[in-house]
Image (cartoon, rainbow, N blue to C red; front, side, top):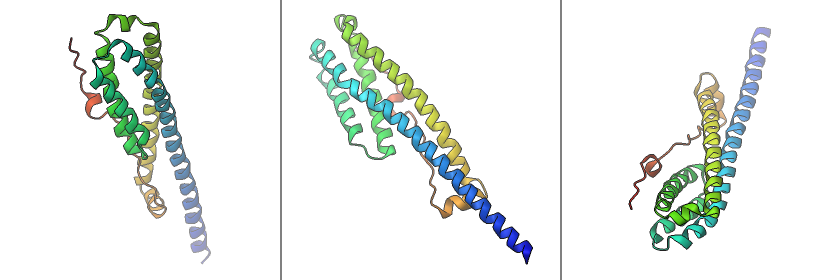
Length: 180
């Protein structure tokens, strides 16, 4: 009888430790996503200044400018991580096209304001890339842990769900076509 009680106490203790470990992992995934969100917000704060600078030089590139604005608005309206991931992919493609368009305007490329904004965006993109990698590594560890046996029992009982990976989609995987 005492062996059964010891066994039940050990199982309960294991379940509590496992639950707490999953909570910590889920918190790390949420924090990693928040870090991506911070960098994306920084990028979005830079975009209006970039658009205003480009507008002054490239008045007839209205479609490209509108696509960047539309993509930015779509991201700001996104509520879930999946919606934000999709909107971010669209924005990355639109920004790539914007910089490709800028190549055909020598005065714009030489503008100190444009160069500063371009450097700030490059720095932000580097930080976003690092944050994405960190998020994916953290999400992978969490996703693996919630499906491993016997941890999957605790994960299933308490509703731990897998988290999506941050992946390049659609336009952001394609080469940007530059036309002069």
